[in-house]
Amino acid sequence: MTSTYRYVFKGLLALLLFGIVVSCSKDEEIVDPTSKPDPEIAQLTKKIHADSIAATIGMLQGIGTRFALAENRREVAVAIMNKFKSYGYATARLDSFQLNVYFRNQYYETWQYNVVCTLPGVEFPDSLTIIGGHHDCILRSTEPESPLDVAPGADDNASGVAVTLEIARVLKQSGFAPRTTIVFATFAAEELGLYGSQHMTNRLSDTLAKVKFMLNNDMVSFCPVTDSTGWYLNVIDYPNSVDFRKHAQKICSTYTLLKTVNDNTYRNYSDSYNFYLRNYKSLFFISHHDDPNYHKLTDLLSNQNPRFAREVAKLNCALIVEANK
Image (cartoon, rainbow, N blue to C red; front, side):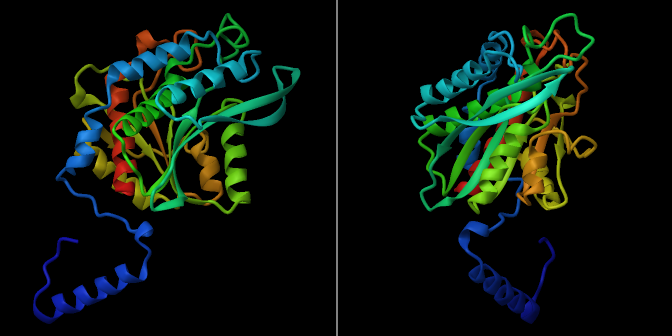
């Protein structure tokens, strides 16, 4: 609020604001954005590295296929779980669920595997701040190969997994002690119908979990522009997260090189949508640069911009740290 109040009006406003703050639990406070960077947030975001993000994208691409119906689907989840464990998250685990679906005229009975990892909150451990993205990928039917055999999925969505892992790495290695519990999650079977996030939100709802917010990263590494002044991120919101989206855009301008837009055309087509359906406040980050390699064999690390993904990771990190200082 930038308006100036004087004399009695200023005093009355101060009393009113004091009453509002006192009546709310500290965990529910919303910090007004500022153009002046917070030193702790700025220091943490500086530890996010494009090379580390690129290495994770390369590792996931190198698996061969991460298609949800491929026989190696559990191995994919285990590889991601082990990456979290290598950063010191000893309790990283798989969360399995059954999925029976038809795909291209064939019926599949499968077990699917989300990956879940937590950094426990020290003040409000029962309140959850969630960040993630789906780890499965697919090929369009016009491609010459079957996704059962190969599906590189660098941008869609090794990039979102890599951003999630990079933030987990930085927070753990920095010794960050969050107020709320931070949940890092990667979802299975998004490409078949958002099934992994549906499974997670069902469990959260069944246990009456307190979700502060959820950040979804999907296709966050494609940007053919080398000059950072032309880097645009689409920040997608939902009816219950419009103010949060505006806040995120301001935070983005404070801590990253990205410019932001808000185009909600595809907001129902990624995992954040299931969180919204459960009335959890969520945002969906996606590059605003159309990827011509979408669901193609050419969705490769060589066509990505890890520096762009680094800036997306900085935004996620800033929002998470700000909410947990």
